[in-house]
Image (cartoon, rainbow, N blue to C red; front, side, top):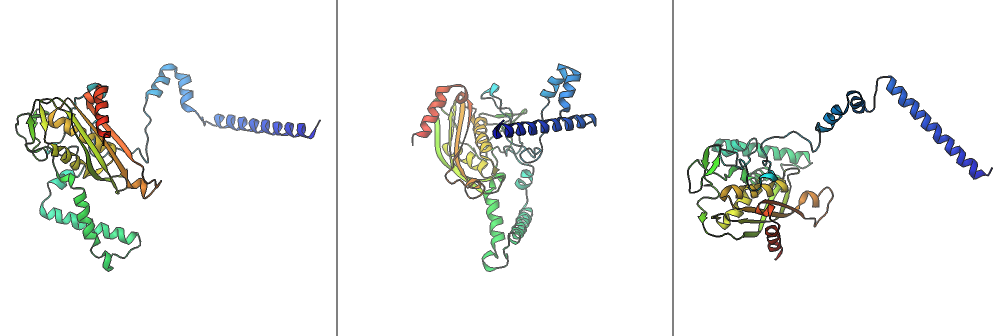
Length: 320
């Protein structure tokens, strides 16, 4: 027997010994009441019905990325009801999916606003101290006050309403038996026109704050719709995008909220929104990938169901 053959036999013998030890440890843990696969044992003892029940039960996830929901986010949109959005503006104040404290900010008095700004300024001072700076030096002396005012301005979308007071208009917005008119943002810029071709406004500059890191993401958004007897003032499309961008956002939700708001405003045959943005949380921290562009879209109505209409829209927004 050669040396190579002897070495091979020794390695094989060692591997078999390790497998035997693992099997003994596994049998010992089972005898002590510990089962590495309890669900498999349950499915064997209770039959196929229990196994199906286990597979149908959703796995509850906790921790990073699976936190419980706080406040009202964008409503679910079912593809089976294309073009029909139930309660797209589910807030009586017309805020469009407000967060938990949005109403407090909207209805705050002058004294409450001053107190909020003072509280925010104090928090910024604490941040400066925590990062190792001296908030009392000349360059940073007024920074807490400046940043407090700037942050409130950059999130002023929490104070702007899509739908105003309850009233009847030429085209009432049905919401749980009542009527809303878009008087704050849309105002009177809804017109009756016999136009059934696509209306597109593209290259609308957008700036928002990422809700995960509170750093900016900037880009452009394109909004298109096919009218159904009503057209919307062109500037109002930009205004709707501006309202939702001036909140803490993720790009996916921002895109969808803009589309649903236009859908609810004039009930067109379809709405399409595409947004391209660069996120500072990807370029100046983390993976640090400058030049990476995130593209999101939301298609409603005929843009979702008709391929040619969707292709026409995508062709138009690319033709720069």
